[in-house]
Length: 217
Image (cartoon, rainbow, N blue to C red; front, side, top):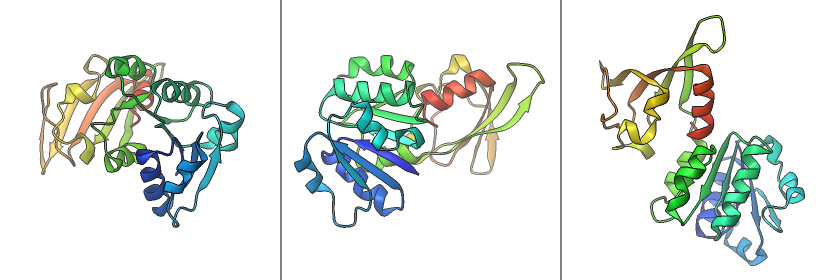
């Protein structure tokens, strides 16, 4: 995967080191050159120094071909701006912003930007979120537009013990079935998810596209 990491503090450098060692194409952007010292000798990616939201600098990262971008500088405003540019201008499929002000979370989720809080998300969980690819359309019904799609969602460890209503927009989808340990049942919004669960959902095609953008599945 091609992953851009904007910010090279503890979270940014930790992600860069791990993702690079796992064979991903990683580019790190920071305004502080000294921060690059946190990248270890095994880091094989690209590093750029400059204003994080400068469009020419972002183009040098290859943002137009990126699979994922995370903005994790020490500034909420910078992170939100970079994430917004990546999502709306360069159409990066998976965009994450680290925000310290929890009051802004709902706003940025509505804009299709996944938000993480520093106190709640470690390097491993954030890495899982950046590389998560477990949301698949398995059946399309109808010939017009929009069509109805049946979607399969494989629950990753990072969503273990979460209620369905905390993960999915219940008003936009219909819960069809949940498979767990060779048993299948019809879940509800209060159902607690377990890692390795498989959920089947029904939704209009437009809603499915929004889900993929909004929830970075």
